[in-house]
Length: 248
Image (tube, rainbow, N blue to C red; front, side, top):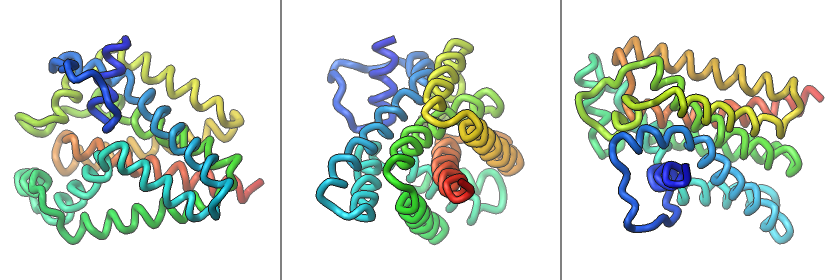
């Protein structure tokens, strides 16, 4: 389990792991079980950074630095997936065109605008949450967004013959599903149960809607699709936190 967690860290972040650690295809697929745990590490690090910086800096500046930290520690892995997906779906007329555009390393108009709107949304929404709420939503959102890989990979086939995302998509086991889901359930305990239920419902809704779209356009998923849903869930949960804070 320790090896699986380290492989998940290596796959999703820039955090140092032993140089000798090289995961096989099967191990990378099994490491999906620990993706939500990586979310706890990333989200918890952001929450801790905010708590330290807020003693010296304005709240909005702290939020900006937390977003920079999050992008750096993950190598903007999921943001890149969102940008590629937007370029592909925005510019491709059929499955082959869409997949070819997604694979292009250059960023297009749809991807650029998507990243701008994404960062603005995260900054705006997190800035509207007080510190007692924000640290909870940071951890929950980063955990839930990485959990979405599990249902998407179980539901949809991989759309390419080859690709990094296929290492994950084709090898999700029942054990991985159980561990990942239990991790998310524990993290949701950070929220009052009615709020946790809403957060889970929003996460499920984004997975279903985005997954249905991927099925319609590609008859499957790619690694970029997984990254796109990750980011959509993260923003949706921040939005949920803001709305529920206003209702109170």
